Image 1 (cartoon, rainbow, N blue to C red):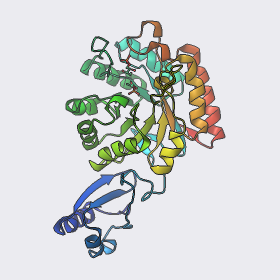
Image 2 (spheres, helix red, strand yellow; image 1 turned 90 degrees about the vertical axis):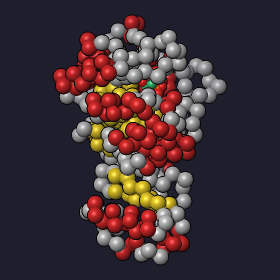
Image 3 (cartoon, rainbow, N blue to C red; image 1 turned 180 degrees about the vertical axis):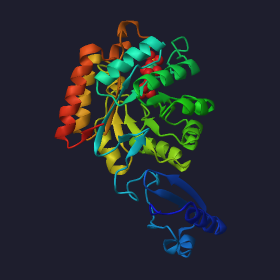
Image 4 (tube, protein in one colour; image 1 turned 45 degrees about the vertical axis):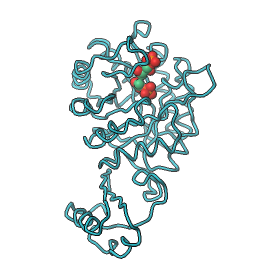
Length: 334
Ligand code: E4P
Ligand code: PEP
């Protein structure tokens, strides 16, 4: 639909398609609304949809994912997270603790995040842990701590939701919902996150192909939300020297196939502090739209993923490297 299309224009198309026995899904992005039509293509051709008010173009999309495909949307998207743009003109640093452990630890981590040049604060209140005995997060108390730190620092919050039943409470506090690697194909969660209307950070499943990842994003988009950022966070390979293998080629491939922004997570992929800077540098020059990085004021006491958290002076180095390389790539650091 053209940017000037009205809700009435959109409703008129949906009614016409449904009256003809088809199905229509509306998704709204920053500039355009897109309507995906499912049904008899020959029949749609007879409806003269291209002449209806507000329609920019009607086209057939051959990929299995439609709304997130670059085929119908050649220009790359910008996702706005509470005023922070993630997209092709910028390089966005998201940083914070892996898990919210206390108000003091989160505030100290937010200081480090700002030192690292972050404009968005990450932090898990609900933690997806391999062991049921490991720290599972502070839940709603963690969300309230994040909201307090946002009030003090002005940093919008990115936080994970692990259960469809928690989407509303997480969306109440968060500026962006994160769906983690373990939940990339939790379809009920993807749909609930898509319906709530906040931007979504969708991590790639550690065993997922790029096509499966884009189809997961399509579940969110199909619920009306095109404000999705993809995050490559490493995949499982035979290699044991790193926690996961950062698939750097996923950055240009996903950007070629989809109009959505793509960032990387050097912390969960490398799994070790000393790998975070080199992987972040690689991300900028591979064309990524940002990074999401763990920081912790005292990683030796961290309740989750301490070995991969940046500390003190590392954050200065990250800020400096990201600024210089973003400039080299013709991007503005947001
Ligand atoms: C992310 O923060 C995850 O909760 C964490 O990496 C899971 O790791 P685990 O295998 O130690 O639970
Ligand atoms: C996280 O970023 O807190 C997280 C759980 O990461 P991943 O889903 O990539 O393991």
